[in-house]
Length: 439
Image (cartoon, rainbow, N blue to C red; front, side, top):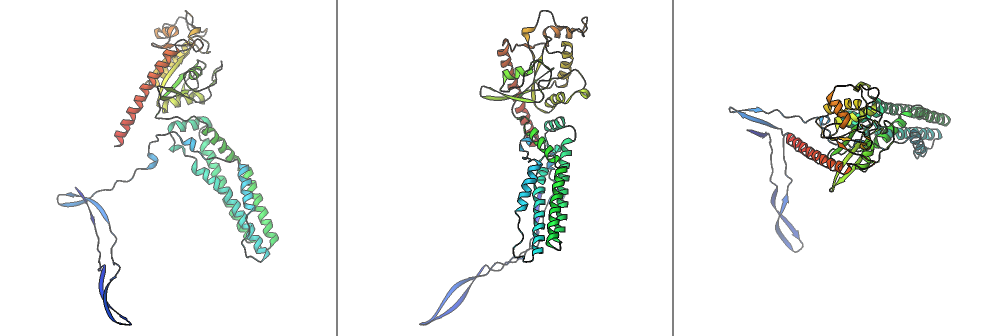
């Protein structure tokens, strides 16, 4: 049982009092009553409220719960890159600031020429400093810190620009802002202390040249930030509430061709490895329902430490996004990777991301022959039964399709629809579970 107590002392005077007032007019005496109101006077001490529990006829204060740190809140959306501010080139920022500063006039009413000139110089230098520093401060404040981003977005930044480069550019921009403010204030102060008109003009010119030199030497950080903003803003937007199909496999196995066939996405299709050099997003509309399809760079047979950034990008999608996997195999030998190596990659990914919904597809089935393809570097006498079976028909239950002849495409679309509907149910169940935990 808990209750709240308040310590309140107050004193009230009557809100109104009727007084008898006598008026005298020219034709006699008249007496009438009218109310005269007095303001209410309230004397109140500081009021304190606290909560307590009743335990064995004594009150025990209840500890107050502290609000949770907002920085620990779970990120549920991926849209930070679309909210990035528009960054101007460093040259444009300085030219715009210079034009505005030159239009600043001295304070009116100053008759002395020297005083008027040093006033104008100080005000122009101060205006130039502010016009340069304010945009830079806006960039620092509006570019998100990595710790507040979704894990997928953090991975995109690190793999696209390298570890620590994003933060380093922001630090350089902030250092440039601080230097502009320091130099601008210093030269504005010197200009305001000038003893003659000529000295004030010299101080003004010196300050303008100094700020221009700083921006010319260190303005590259702003241009680097402009490149970062353009690159991140062009990244595909992923809706976490929409079921997503992720195509995975070795390079050049036909993933991009399937994405073009299944969705609105138009990735580049060429006959060489690593055609896909980033995450490409398409959409599917089935029975008035919308789904996402993403094409990922191919994976090679090697450990994570040796993988390039394109391969790590694929692993980041699988690790941080709720996706269903469509794994593409090419047993025709046209992709440039042996079926044995594809089998090893497939086993690693299926064990690593076995909790995802899964569908296996054998592409280029029109090129398959009766005898399995065996590269010269492979062991023909291998006794691994699962590998021998994989060379012939691929994984158990895999669909055989051909984009060229459109064999198995209708069945593939049906299976993809079923897979995405199952993914939608999984997303809904997770959302309900999260709501229960929050409540």
